[in-house]
Length: 280
Image (tube, rainbow, N blue to C red; front, top):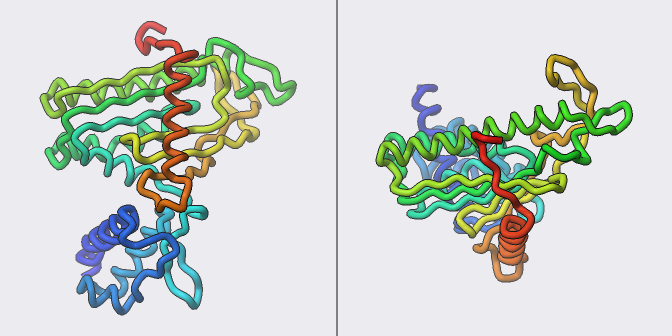
């Protein structure tokens, strides 16, 4: 019986999650009671409870003690990137623009939809990914040595290696899909710019934008065999906020997406310089 419940839980979470993302359940709206959801889906109460916890972990709903479970308001919602990336791959033509410090989070978010393409569950015709990152061959505001906030070439080389590793993996995965005949057209381009990237931005299918700031925190890393105390941009602590062209007319969501696209394109087409992942 527990095994059946564990299998059915994703079905409930997926159904409710889709209703929230397509705004059939609006921001601030109260979800049906546990009893009503149990009757709607025909699953055990425990299954419904675990599904709601999954949605809360994903940042789509908030539980208010003594009141019920509500869809998070757009202004308070912390966005989960992965479901939107996967949803994007259901489109015929997929576009993802990323600006940030490295493409580690994007790399992780891409794994599940790419697996689904490999087994035929998703069938896009084209995928275009643009990655915009700092040029680590020049000094940056961070990462720097903690002792004197000084530039250290070893830290920049370490960060460049991390960026190149994830970007290459994304490129090679896309190339594999094209080589296997699973996606007709794939393209991954990387450009660098001289400024330090203090925030990350994703624009997905030109309809959804995710934005968040990198906090700077003390860290200790290994660089060329030496442990170095540094001030670092910490991506794992970045909170992403979601904006969509499908937001209500009274919200600024569509404008946020438009401005995110405008900013990315302006940097990409002016001070962004092509970066060769194999010949850097």
